[in-house]
Amino acid sequence: MGNNRMNNLLPVEMEHPECLVCGSDSRHPFLTVDNRFDTSQKFNLIQCQQCGFVYLCPRPGQKWIAQYYQDSGYQPHQKETVSLSGKVYQLVRIWNNRYKRRLIEKYFKNGKILDYGCGTGEFLLEMKNSGWETFGLEPSPAAAAIARNYHLSIIPDLKNLRGKVDVITLWHVLEHVHDARKLLAELKNILNPAGLLCIALPNRHSLDAAFFKKHWVAYDAPRHLYHFSPMDMEKFLSSGGFKIFSMKSLLFDPWYNSFLSTSLESGKNRIKLLSIGLIKSIFTAAAVNFLSFFNKKNDSSIIYLARPEIDK
Image (cartoon, rainbow, N blue to C red; front, side, top):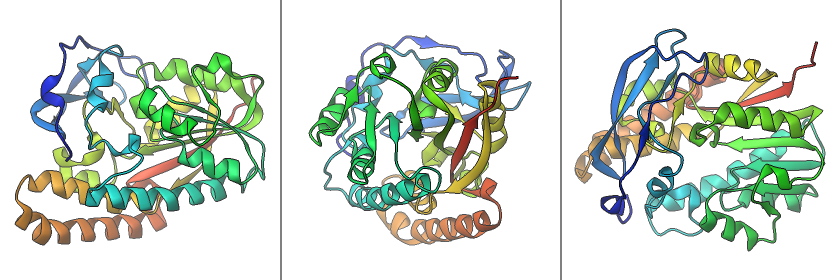
């Protein structure tokens, strides 16, 4: 899983948040999961007793979370990689960026777009090359520096954005944001009334989540703070003044998630990974793709397409 730097962690202050969806602080244990880069570290997922939402609690505070992104195996912040899973990730990312652009251009042929949590900027580069006016926000200095090498406009804060935008995207980002409700309100303020909000998230009700349980890679504690189902997202976005009008798939996510989950489940047993594990990951991913063809709520990851609701 890359060179492990987790043993050098500084002391971390933990916090106990309330439920993001309904605000309740009534909860019960749901699952204990490992930090996939250091399995000696255990984290607790809890479930809200009022609405059923699942989230990380306790969790590292915002001032301390950055160190959990420093492992060299954390692929979203990599420009180049030598590992097999990293190479696969890079190829999938190229295809996904083109797919995302085509999806957005079904609703807007061009315009002004903000990619919140833009990482190393490859999606924004795809949009810029298609004629879009692009802006990105990325809290990781290393990832932002790579994005700026593409001559992209990377802003340090939403306050630096002038005027409203037509499209806002968060590709596997919302689950990382400590104050997600505040962010949603800020995004609504900068989005045109007829604009488009695209949020991609892992789906905790997916078949691969059920198969792999605590080894499901998308639990990714402590980096993933929340674990949404489609019903959770509908409630959360509605409370922030948005209405979901469509849900789409990310075709390769079930394959990538299943392979990495199998790797976590197999541990250091390479024979198990390349035999039973490989068969299990292929079967699971194929089953997810098949079921999601009929109902997107079965998918490993879901792209939620939403628009601002008209104030009454």
